[in-house]
Amino acid sequence: MKKYVRHLLEDIRNSHRPEDFFEKKESSIISGEDELDGHFAEVDRYLNIDSEPTFSSYCGLKKEMFPASEYYDQVELQKVNFEFQQMMRSWNLEIDLPNNFPEARAYELMLGILDRSVLVGKYGLQHFDFCTGNPEGCELGEYCPCIEYWKETK
Image 1 (cartoon, rainbow, N blue to C red):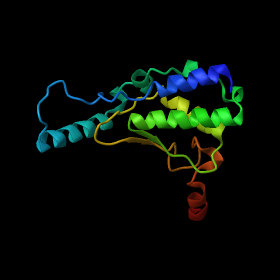
Image 2 (image 1 turned 180 degrees about the vertical axis):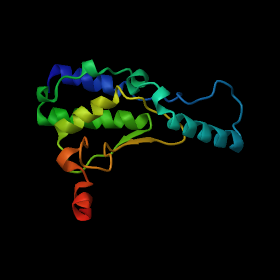
Image 3 (image 1 turned 120 degrees about the vertical axis):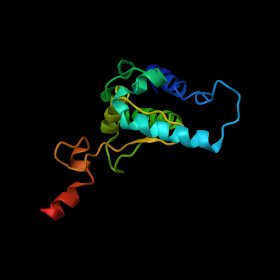
């Protein structure tokens, strides 16, 4: 494995959400009503997602740190993708891609999330499937799960 890839994997592992990220500053016991209010506050934040910080501002990773997918061999690319997805899960963010989706394209889509506004919520997760529901212009291209549906409806 290339030395840079080893360092990059370490940087990704160090970018997981800190354990105390959601802890309140006060040491009071949270009532059930406070939890419900917190949940609804997150829903409101999600509805205004464009005003949320980018994922990069949370995890500290920058797109510029990542070389083009051609830099990696297949094993390295799989490791980087796996570690990146694990790191995202620690921030309550999830990626869902088709099973046969190419690793290099998955890598590019994942890196794009660094520049997107995200909701890092305590009460749920933000899910990225990259599918618009219409295969025309879909980021998944020929792997879009909607292709068969659209063929059947025409």
